[in-house]
Image (spheres, rainbow, N blue to C red):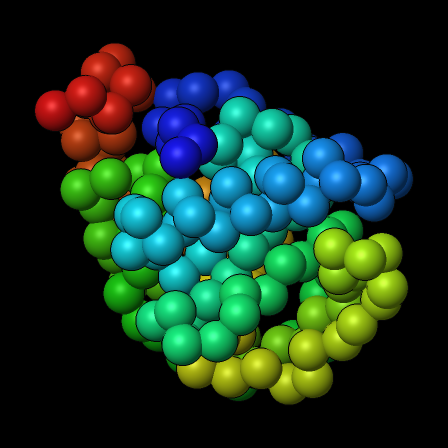
Amino acid sequence: MLAIHIFGDPILRKTAKLVTRFDEELKRFADEMTVTMREKDGVGLAATQTGKSVKMAVVDTSGGERKPYVLINPEITFSSEALSEEEEGCLSVPTIRLMVKRPSCVSVKAKGIDGKEFVIERAEGLMARVLQHEIDHLNGILFIDHVSPLQRRLINGKLKKLAKSGGEE
Ligand code: NI
């Protein structure tokens, strides 16, 4: 299992690099990311969270029923004007859950592990939310960046503690 990097680690704020080599090593890494996501009961995991600053994420909102999506160099190609607000959390920001407003529907273009491009058309609900959350990670953005200054102030103490402890309780 891969170690999850916790809030305060500068890698979480970096823009990840594009993946250019689709080889066996990339496949192994995708498998490791999937195992880690499942182990941690996550619905998504971005490579940056595991200390690797490359544009890659795994997403599974089926509870392990289906194969996870492996998204390489993903891009949002459509976002609805309609927004929805739901509670979010993040493996890199443990103990904090907040209501986050995001477009309720998105389309995403990405490459698969084989290097072939594919499109997820008009994802909605949890899938739309997770896609946006993981693609944010690859651009150095965390879900706590989307909340109001007031909400942010309320969690500031917790965030400082997290950054100090590196995730150790
Ligand atoms: Ni996250």
